Length: 364
Image 1 (cartoon, rainbow, N blue to C red):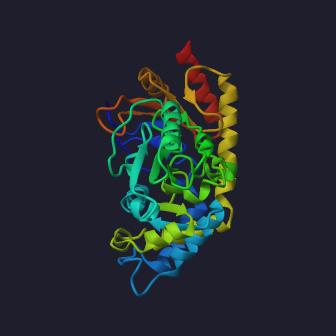
Image 2: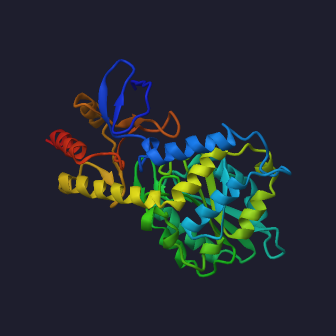
Image 3: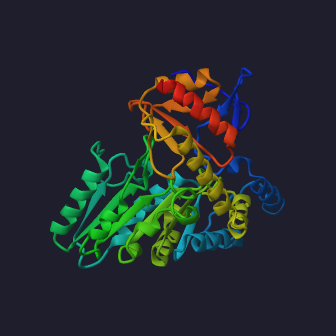
């Protein structure tokens, strides 16, 4: 696999270190926030107040109010009780998995805990008794519902899944968990790193798919450094869950994200910036799909900005025609490479016209 380098942040285009320029259809900056002028302005002005970083525990006797303000804005946007900011999406998942058994128990009616890990679940959610599952998601989900239904009520079940398949994009029908007859001891943990800001009404993610009876025991984690453009992670859930995490030594002992970015997140949420960028993204997706005329070249999800192929020749074809997608093994070197074409809010219609033209040539 050839590796390319760049001295500049990609946007619509990318310039490699050897001076070549390509249209850029890769990465996870779905809403184009890496070049968002409001984000740059908010971060710059906040740096004057908060400095470059905050070298302290969030649980110190002196606390910067900007974190709580940003968390409240995020919770309001996601229509959830409470949210927590941490340094990264990976740490959001791992912090939750380290404390998850303190959340689901201890209760006298719970004698043991069983984990149900979805196929391809992100390493952020790898926790106790993790075993890799290479099966089909739908089959695993149906079997999980059957297992929980057949298990005695003194067992707590922790279901861990991504909201959407990655790197080979695939849709997950999370509504299957709404069929659980007794949700009292069932807990759903969802990684929204590739859905937050992209999927759901105004980019609010997949919570609207979860039955209100299960939602109080549904815990969400996400990187904010993808669609939302903030180098941090977040956890959102019921208030008692977040309070448990706030008291955790794993939270107290970890450095927080830079406060300037917490301020920028707060302001972008207040200004409705993310839904506006989400609307632009959805328009670009619709336009490109129509230009491809229902081609079978890609594995894709309706309304989602990622178009995948298991054919590595597509990556080389795009490159030869002045476009750079991605094609590399993920999450481990042993995994098969997937060619991913990613649209963003930054792309213009002529970019999408050119992409469709080149993809059609590949099919021919």
